[in-house]
Image 1 (tube, rainbow, N blue to C red):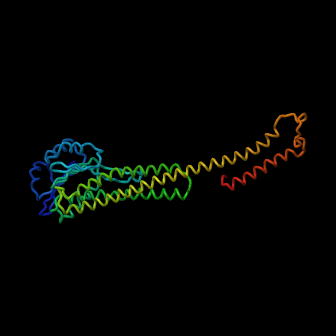
Image 2: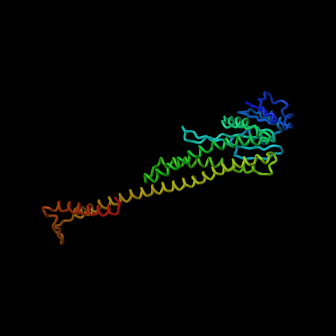
Image 3: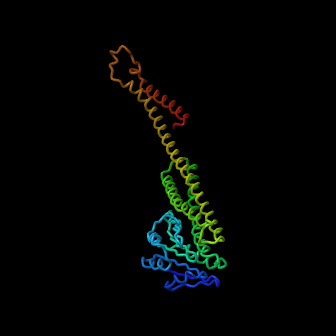
Length: 331
């Protein structure tokens, strides 16, 4: 589906175009701007738009194939940009990304996407409200679109940061290893890496757009692109900071796991030593030697209270060892 809007700059009037026929003849008119939004376009529709606007076949091919990395490419008379929108899905606790392809000329913007992107509707309203900046060319429209998309990154990143901080509090509060918590930290870290793979290249895109040698945008537009650049840079720094913090948290969690395992091994070792002392005594008195012919005499064997003496010795030694290991905090 194609939605085409034409803007008359001197009169600040907007109208929806019903056909794209001969639109290439109107591109030379600097008093008009055009925005074409292509939602799930067919190959024929893309070919028609490419022919009318003189778009490069390689750029059209990239717009047809999804899952492109964020990038900006400069062609003879337009720029091709791949940008991403991001949304946090509360049900799945995952971040969904949606690709947006943009063809940017001096007085036109073409957006191509295969799923709905709400920021496009928001940018359209901002473009129509800020009619005083129409004389600056297509820059304010592109700024409104990119700024809306970047602004929606902040709730996503804030949610990831909040979850990471909750994990940190739980780790240091419980002081115990939790397998589910470790998997959740891995999930958060994976999502942050996913966001970082989007934000970092987009910072390079905005760096190109803020270049003073840019032939498409006037000087007035560059300040707005620098504002979006600052937002993306702040997001990238936040993601890097909490990615490192999550790595430290995972190391702390693994340390707690090792400490817990060591504590279990100490307890088992202490219990083995206590049982071993009793086994040592019973082993001595359980040897099957003929004591009547032995040169050594074990008087406890014929003593009426020898059985209780052996049990008392076992209990006393076990008690002493138990107190000793308790002081060592092995038990």
